[in-house]
Image: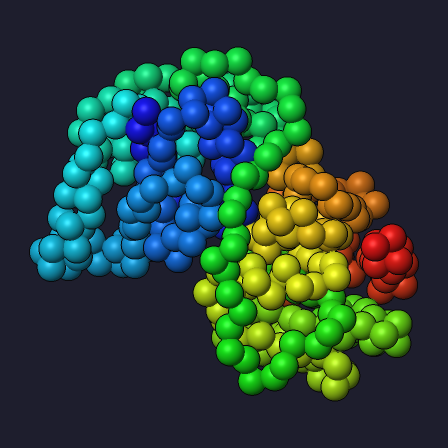
Length: 345
């Protein structure tokens, strides 16, 4: 059986879909998947051994100049790649407007969520086979339910199994030698309201170093790299990483004793790898999108307005939209939780 999955972004959302592939492989031992994904995250589907071919889009770049990319042949090339092979089933597992557009470009029927399950309601019009799922469940279970209904098997009630094979992920050449004993501090996030203050990260860095650990701080772009440099400035045992391919980040995280994360894609990477990790939550709901896996802990702000799902903090005492709730998570509180995780190993 051959199945095409359409799920373009983002990093954490892609990882949420991996256990559904493992479920399907338990039911259909010969199943193979192709996957349509944004080129920035093309590594993620390839971590699952049942994914045989990855078809990449560049829709973030294309939308800046649709006509230019149409006439230079780039979009036409994607259309040909999308329709090159025949499949037993095509499933849109993202079910928003951008993935619905890709579904419309694919010849033949596509399965996707019905109007009662879609968050971006017009998307359901792109699907021939409509699936109803409970939207108020964790994203991992929602993906498992979509796959089960699309392929017509009972949704498993087992613990989710990401089923990844990361043996090919290699350490990169760095300007420094990775320390023997380190903690990964994932400070970055796509929303302002998910950020823990730099001074808190600095204080935690000093506590980790005092306890005998180095810290390694990743970044995904120039702005995040500058923030990482600020955090690392407090200690010679703090190391900043430039932007790296995801396979390299996987290899570095594999060597970490634990991770402390903002609510971002690398937090879900830790969960996928069963790496002991604590993730900090303020504006988002762990019930729906919290890291899911063994050795995962959620540290949640106690403020009554959380989760607000605001990208900028609306409270009058917020400075430049920075989240008040995240600032109230004190370094001592966070370090005590992280120290317990490290001591348990």
